[in-house]
Amino acid sequence: MMAIGPFGDTEYAPALPAIAHGLQADYGMVQLTMTSYLFGSAVSRLFYGPLSDRFGRRPVMLGGATILILGAVICLLSFNIWPLIAGRLVQGVGACAGGVIADAAVRDAFAADRRQAIYARITAVFALAPAAGPIAGIYLTEWLGWHANFGLLVLLSGMLWLLVWRYLPETNPKRDPAALEGARLRHHVWQALTTPGFLLYASLGGFCVGVVYTALIGAPDLVMNVLGRGNLAIMIVSLAILTAFVSGASLGALFSKKLPRDLFIGAGLAVLLAASVWLLLAALLIGKQGTLATYLVPIAVCFVGVGMVVPIATARAMAPFGENTGIASSLLGSIQMAVAALGTLAMGLLHAGAVVDIPIVFLVLAGMACLALLGHVSRRALHLGQAT
Image (cartoon, rainbow, N blue to C red; front, side, top):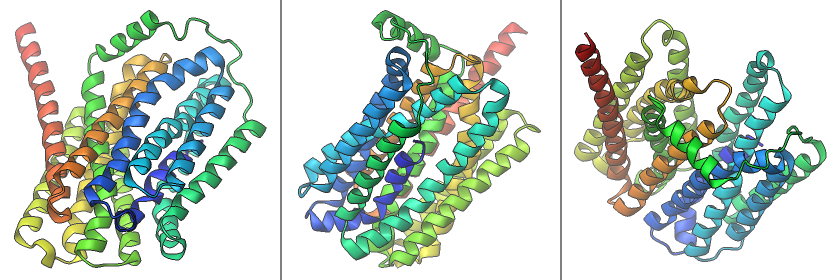
């Protein structure tokens, strides 16, 4: 349930240049397939939690898996860019069900003192899925063509449906008939949005997730079309990015308890901003004459910063909610996906050339995140000064 979505994100990304060629579409249009996916995920994520409170975890998860199969079939049968964009939108609606329902089911089924161990096991699978995706996508595209990526997703989504049907029990015995009442939903959403710090940390995480998806759709164009490298280079980039992200997250686990959390988030954003400037300078001064390392090193440093920020920003956003995290968790994911979607939309609309596109969008996202954090720190210092 946790793995199919992130696997599908990364699995088809190496095929983007082949999709553009096969559909005779502009690469910027092909990048919009990720934008539509993220928008579908951002909107639908808000509803899976309340729907599962009302009707149960199992039927809602089966519904999400069915939508995921439908989206993959539409993509598989697409021979024009617009059906592909629509199919990815449907996929996004279905894909996020797994994460939302898995989180809710764990909370239903396990006592608080056991959840951390369960989440650790789930997170391990969640982390492996996006790393395996590009490797599968590279060879499927080379051997069978880009449609095969979506054929695999049809197969995996069907397997997911069968596994949920066979093995997932209903973990929510107490259905809430009022879970979908509009006034109640608006109240909970407003309560979450107005909780001090929630919107800030959700947005910071969103800006960083936007960097992730920008790299995901921009790197294949940069590596294959601009630098003229092959499949091995794509795998090197994928592994380097994953290693950099894990390194940043490990730094967070090591130092975040020893330093003020906002200070550590600020350090991560400073790393991201500096590496984005470095990447843009390389693009402007060296351009298409650069080597793979010219761009891979600053991109990897960017991901160290992203790894430093995302886990702590997520924890800070959710900290005020205690056990009552359902709506807040869904809203957090929706905000992150929506901000990421705007980043990929900017990539698709800008499309001035992959060497320039990636650093420009990185720099804008990093700059907005830094300004948001600086504004928050300044307001807090002002309030403290007035109180004193």
